[in-house]
Length: 335
Image (tube, rainbow, N blue to C red; front, side, top):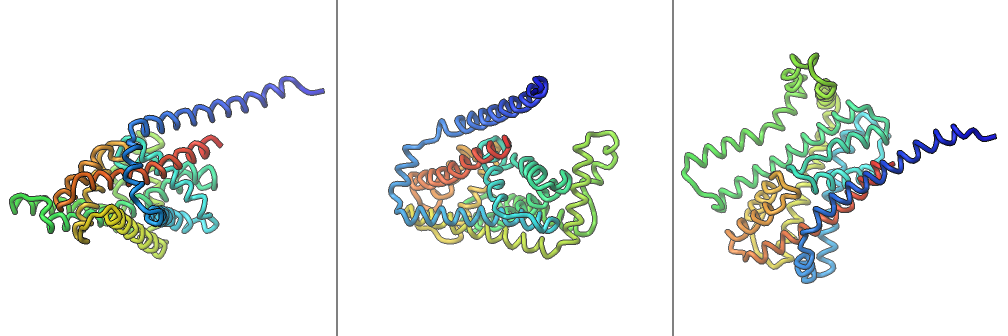
């Protein structure tokens, strides 16, 4: 004879799981609604319909290459300590992280805890080790992005996109240079066995939360990775630069397909303006992206309508990736 209390106890976890799943999808769909409700779909369509099918396919193919390279960087870092780590699931994780970061306020960050959760829950990697892998992934991402900003800053000065007194410009470039070397300096310190965050937090560790101690342990693991897996680190850096090359080529093709004629230096200047716009604490750099491209491309003699068409094309691409990412995130978290 069946035990009613046993049936009741098994029914409760199922109902809780169902409620959790519904709540997660509700939050993600609300987030997606607020992100898309003001999207200019008619204007996006007008910008897209003038493109040929092969041009759209080429842009999507390059974008897939960039996403693959970004995923490969993270995979190389994780695989150094976990050789059996599969690659394809991490592509889905990367899209989920992008969707969460893109549609929430902040400078293109926010999905990193989701990266940690995926590694811990789906692959049995410890919380501290998963955190250290994400730290290394973000460090290398910042390193390559700052290299792009450094090249772009030179391009901006070269094409005369900014002006000012020589002293003020020199001081600005010195400050920018100091900012650019921070990720590289931090990686070098980790390789030398020096833990900057631990030194700062050490006096507080006994008095603070587990989160602080987790950061200290994760930094120590990242330091071990820098010393133990030098080959993997350089391979991850090379893959990051391949992603950067893909981003630059994708931007150049978009500009060309929309009928704009600008040279390579101007491409890096306008691309840097775009990167800076994404650092603004706005979902997807909303408004800042459009303003940056109108200003930069306008300085190169391009009409505002062409710049807006370019940003609409970018919005279409990122909305597609972000929307897929949010749906994948909901599916992954609900499991």
